Image 1 (cartoon, rainbow, N blue to C red):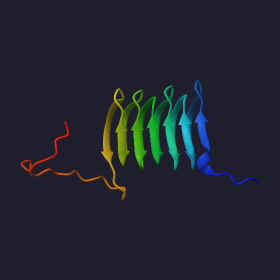
Image 2 (cartoon, one colour):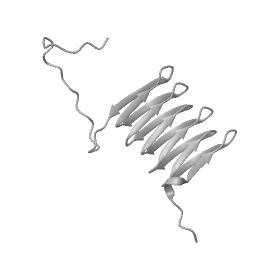
Image 3 (cartoon, rainbow, N blue to C red):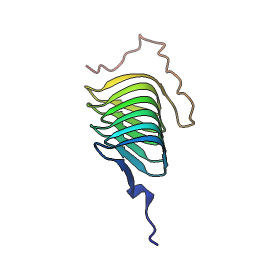
Image 4 (tube, helix red, strand yellow):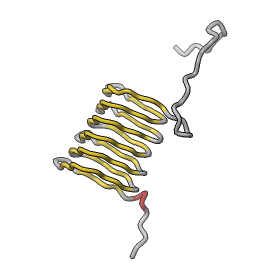
Length: 133
């Protein structure tokens, strides 16, 4: 029996396919069809341009190019591409939202210790600052 590297494997729901239920895996997951239910993986989740997910996602990182509706919990980076649409509740450590993306979500950011990151308070507005524009 061969020893396969999990990081090289990817589970896929192809275009024009649908799945309803719970999915759990150690490796990456790509959805180009329709998925309704719960996804839990230690890998990356990609929702392709034709993909649609209604449910809950728990993963290490995610790229949303299609439509997502529900709750998503990302340990590291959540990237919403220009064709992406996210509706629901989002918890992540880092967030990228490209121009043209739709982001209608209640969101919170976590730090490394899985705690909600504290807000940085700006107290002195009279100090000289670098101009950025």
